[in-house]
Amino acid sequence: MMAEQSDLVISVRGLVNQFGPFRVHDQLDLDVRRGEILGVVGGSGTGKSVLLRAIVGLRSPQGGTIQLLGKDVTRLTEEAQALLTQRIGILFQDGALFSSMTVAQNVMAPLREHLSISDRLAQEIAAMKISMAGLDMSAGGKYPSELSGGMRKRAALARALALDPDILFLDEPTAGLDPIGAAKFDELILGLRDSLGLTVFMVTHDLDSLYRDCDRIAVLAEKKVIATGPISEVSALDHPWIKDYFSGPRGRAAFLSTPQSSATPTRPGLDA
Ligand SMILES: Nc1ncnc2c1ncn2[C@@H]1O[C@H](COP(=O)(O)OP(=O)(O)OP(=O)(O)O)[C@@H](O)[C@H]1O
Image: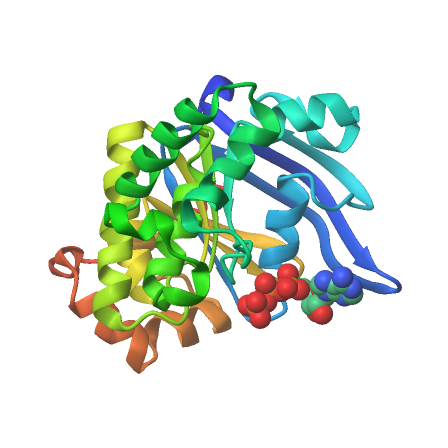
């Protein structure tokens, strides 16, 4: 199924990322559609985080184009990049909260950086985002070190939502959470996508998250995105890594614990 060009919020073509002589991505293509939750999977070192960093403009690729919300991020002035940055929210793997600031101050940081609003309004917005991220109001006054791992993720999510982004980038959002905490976090992401109309780009190793949240998945291997599509289709592909990943014991367990498991996976055409 081809998406209309206007439905694409991210469009990557011919991407090359290289560190010294080591090429991570070679002619990689990827599209992300407005309003979808896309799960990005692949073996360790296939360049999922590098891809995320390139798309959000945190690293300059060696080749190719990256359209993000209609702008080529590889050719932006600093000013244009700053404006674009306001329209995306990023949840890094370690949360990357400022440890010397309370949760509320962390959430207010991007508001202060990008908007000229009163302290009072910034505090009100921060309180709203903290509650949207599923944290109790009292969490706002706490420092990151006083929070559990799951609460820290939610605090980082509140900060990522501070500027009402169009796209949320999540790098391993459920890593380090227990299965119940991870399931709740997945539910939260799904709820936020539905209520805010967000597009979500999620790098994850968590098969349960993929089955629970993702409309489509993209598989990184051989320096490229080798397949995209609904999980039922991609998981049935005849590729060694895909077979290992989805048909190993963990893959089977995740599949069996989802409602889709009653549907017979069909052999796909690649829709990349
Ligand atoms: N700043 C850097 N300098 C040199 N090499 C790097 C740098 N950043 C990433 N790499 C290399 O690029 C490759 C891809 O890294 P990346 O972190 O994107 O992998 P990943 O798919 O996210 O892996 P994982 O699932 O283990 O987190 C790795 O081989 C890594 O060593």
